[in-house]
Image (cartoon, rainbow over all chains, first blue to last red; front, side, top):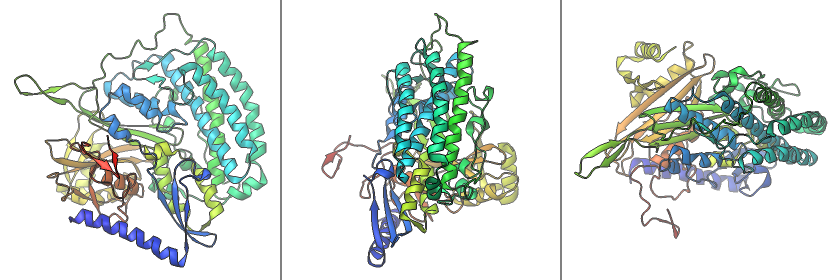
Length: 413
Length: 166
């Protein structure tokens, strides 16, 4: 047995010993993988002393679908549907970031027509709203408030309907392609979208009255699961998790990709209004505020799309799509702000070795990446869970899990 | 601070042999670091007031292909106060023997985010991280055989608990 393997066996034995010890002194409680409040197939092993959680050991991988292995044998264009399935609540954001990364490698990122860029941002922000609505709705139901869940799903249904109209699919769109779009927006989409924005704004006020300022909800979430900013940064948390801890860090602003520099929006952060900065309520509130900002972005996109970037009969969203996606050999890490935080793709592209008829090795251009690593925001956000849930009540652990808002499709990839 | 300045800063502080090379071509320049001293470098970059690379964006284990017999780890760091980014690389020759895994120091003491990333790189590529506090498998089952993301991984005649893998 080699040293690495023996060290692995050692780590495994240490873990099993820990569980065995806990089973005699404390109690080991399995939460998940089928527990409704773990938001998917996450298994948490809790070492508990009465109602107090001494330690949380997350077990992930139940939804592992070998994204990175698949990406090594498929072309860049063929991988887009796989990226959709990572964070399946915000598929548009995933494929947007994937496509931008590939376009940067090809060097065509400046040639994308403005109308396409605005449509991309429009659908991404709509999808971000849908994702945050699920986060808020299911968070309510975790804590015991049933109504917000139904309200959020009712409003999300409008977005799903619109995106289905544009792409033909409700959740996994495959709408944004490298260098373009699947189709232009359907005729009348902009008007329908504006109707939705007008309908949705008062609904947010209602939702705030129902949940945000609800005393029971505040009691359950304020001062619970406090994530200090330095811990958040050290553990690579991003998105609403990091902003909830009081840091203004939004890659749409920092990196200024796509047309975000032309758009006006605020970056909401947690201020500790109801308790401590970085508690569950702050993370929840950041999402609520972000919905409003996203609505603001959607409105600006609609303005542009209906005025100077109006649809023309000869507009072809696939005109700039390259015939062959063969970047130069290079390594590139692209990051963007997904609905849950920093979504990054690390590409290594290399030439493919091929044998010709005489048996000589030739280097050929290829459309298939050599290696792709995906950095899911939920993956890093979840990894901080054992750190912030030491010594909390089991019921509070539910509140903490809900406030992290992860999607297991992205954690496990 | 750009990559050249960071290189100067590192060599001035930690010795000239710490930076083995530099990749300047491409969109993102990278520094090649001495594999055994990567923890020092990360700690210096994180704590130095001139750099403050406090955010580990991504850590990827890489198998550089069939005939290269080389394994590496790529670190993507970001600095929140300065809004800059940096790529560090370490790599080692290896015989591809599963009894002799390539081994790098773990940077978990510097960045908590590295914990799960390193566990993932260990189970997928078969890179061992010395000093990691809990190097169990993360996504794969505990009794999984082999390292699936290696370029020479083959699924021919491979079964897991009676289920064919393909």
